[in-house]
Image (cartoon, rainbow, N blue to C red; front, side):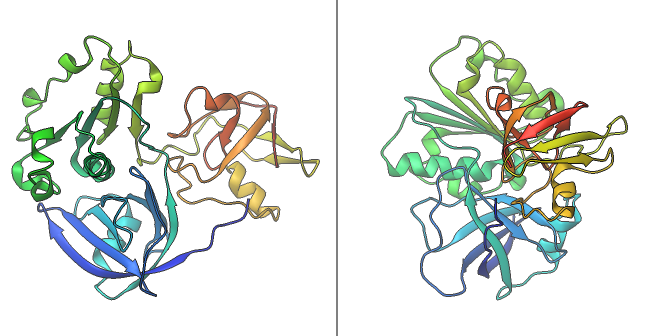
Length: 317
């Protein structure tokens, strides 16, 4: 599991939209096309502060000459993202990792997209993909506080997309929240994609509890609590190298293995990207990631955040 080489891109456009969001357009420093991506994909960006952060790509996958990002500009609570907004200018060079996709648009007859705030970015790329393919059977419900805080409002009003979009503004009053129950009351063949604030995604998860899990898809880049006060030390057995290593209660598997000389791929290190996905051979695991499905958790672990519940786990490393 080797670290992927970084790509150098240049900021060619930077502007604030919808009051509180910064839009960046990135192009290759060498000109020409950037690596291809699929709708729902994200890139990892090394911020001026040095941290790696994930940002969904909002442009159509057919647009290979640039990547379009939108970042919460003034309300971010993570310093790395804030440094990307405050400490960069047009013409600056950034290092990024190639696109990855943990929010893949699967083939379906019908789609329901639910977005809130900055969560519109991967959803917009999905809508653009469907339009480019002539797929008309989809609808987007996009919830924001006001028209002024609606990211990509102009693009959503374009002739081809507007008939598929419902914009809802709650004006900051929870009593004005959108009623999604009519969409979920009767299970259908629709695939649902949701990206937005945690309360919104928890609400959709609750409403869709009687639907097949495989039809409900979430994207969540909010960090998880990596280390917890009641964590205990445990042992990892690395099957390929026939080695046992103790993971202290205050360290992650990823960090400990790196300290022992293992060159392991990672990106977010917060359980939200899937870069460090590792095959799990045996052992009782405390899964803390926001990526793996329930079925995948039988065979995989995200070693940046998840741990054994005690004792020993075996990894395919």
